[in-house]
Length: 192
Image (tube, rainbow, N blue to C red; front, side, top):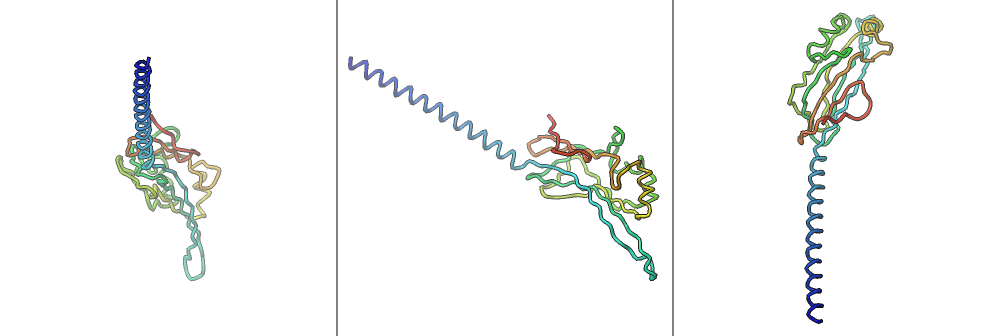
């Protein structure tokens, strides 16, 4: 009988050792998963758009005739922790995509009659936008007295409204992809 008890004790110790080894393996695999997830999240970009409107008064001559200049700019900011790699970019008007550099001359050529584009930035495919950095996509400057003409031409009811969208598709260093749209509220849309 004593031999059987010793044998059962050996089996119990062996089974316990196997169970402890399996639990250790599970914990090791789970920790590895957590470290990988933490590493991925530590370099995740998060792009957002912001529309900036500034007004400045200018004196035309010594008789104190003033005019008001309006600057409208659309900026792209990376609020994430890692760089955003640009995968594609386009302006979209009435469902049709356009190249950023030629959009205004193609779709809204009369805007140059009322004002000046002081900046149009080309976002190149593969270009990285570092974390906490902002770039202006475009800046348009015009006189306040032309505001009603511009609103009529763009067919907008609210001043400073953009009748088009900018779509930016971007990825992280881990090749996760998102798309952000300038006229949409909320989070970027994750792509599969």
